[in-house]
Length: 79
Length: 156
Image (tube, rainbow over all chains, first blue to last red):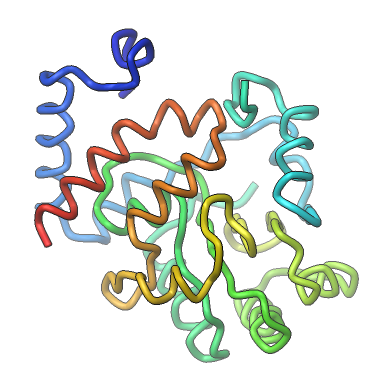
């Protein structure tokens, strides 16, 4: 998970990296069905979840739409 | 709001798409999760080949899965727009016809990984796509995803 040191450097500390490997090892021991049960969650995302269908001509158009319409805290923007 | 995506629904996609002959790959975090990446996400992202025949098969498969597509929505899918968000079915689905960071569907198809019958983008392609998208949430998740990619490769 993101931490301050990681955000500043983009490179995990060796301790952080070891923790990730332990998580990957633990996940590898679980069957796919179980992994998926805990991986897919449902939380409401404002604006994004408010329309049943959206189509964008280009990915660039979609990215601009995200920047202009979604709350920044959702993380869909580029800055 | 649809329920959370689950294994049974992934199976339904796999089976419906196979019956209709749809060429697609799981991509994004949902693809990484299928490969074993321990993380959370909300919906499934599918990289779909953009060809008239494949888009027609896709529409049929989506209707089989009980997505309520209007005629206009059907036309947009048949046109193979770059990105389509579906929240009008039993689960949420993002259809990506031109993901950032991947040049051609055929390249990704050749590199695909089969996970219990699910066609999944190679982790290199998932990482490339996230890196090219370069959203805040991608930048936050990329170091851990890259570490997973390297771990996954070391076990092959």
